[in-house]
Length: 92
Image 1 (spheres, rainbow, N blue to C red):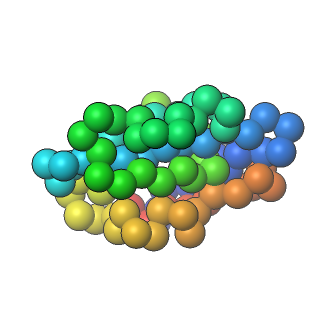
Image 2 (cartoon, rainbow, N blue to C red):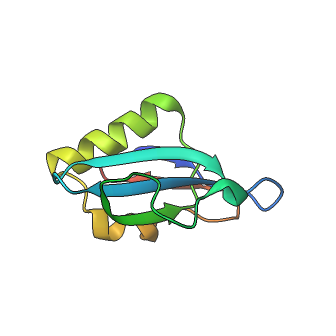
């Protein structure tokens, strides 16, 4: 059984920005699409991805924890989300 998270919708595009940091850990923040910075969100980020999901606080914590524990592959994050308002299931 996975973790179901709401996708963004076209009327109010919300995204979650994920960052892979220099120390090998991960960070994330939910924001409106137009608020995503052009430069890395975190000063020590080596990579950053934008995913069209709108997780609740505890859901976001579970996703970041799964990334940090190696139970979720950072490279597959953009396989989730969308503008259709549906939901995405994370395998964690």
